[in-house]
Length: 280
Image (tube, rainbow, N blue to C red):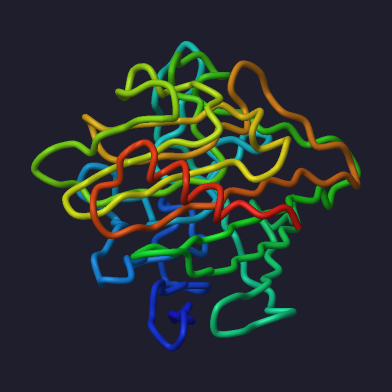
């Protein structure tokens, strides 16, 4: 069974959200956005690509919550490498406390082995910006529903340098040439990866995505960036060390993504980020 909704701006569809799907368990079933499009209709997400079949458009994915894999695919184990384990969790849709054409609030449970580990309150808002651009405002709040601390990790914290993925993640379409990657002060995948820039831009063939941390906690998270191997951008919840969520506590992050037609330059990207990031 697949259940979906469509985000719209002035009646124009800009994103399809799949909140229930029949994905295989090795993909760590979870809600996702795909396709997401520019106002001109260009798709800027990819679903289940051959290089990483567990990449699902735009969403929240974490490879290690107390040893449970909510990312999909193999699990990186210290001193063993990437191993296929029967440890996949799932994000289960519970309901929409609020649902409008251009926004929704969703409740989910993160479950593994029949146990609820986290309750998530997810809020998505689509906003028009000046010119041929719009912004996706994506907030997720992960609340520990157990009676003990939960620890979030990544392949990096488990012994694989440079692989601190886990959190918000956007898989962009793979094209003939890798996208250009830049921030306000630097450019190139190597320079931008693991930085804590205020924003990161991806410029592809006729489209640009600009990702910005929209609160203090999110701005402290380093960026996870891939361009040459595959095009993907995310924030790192567990970069140098594991991140704990105490019993009854909540971890919240907010990322705003500018979705634009055309290839933006540094100045244009900065201007749109200023429009898009609004303190609530």
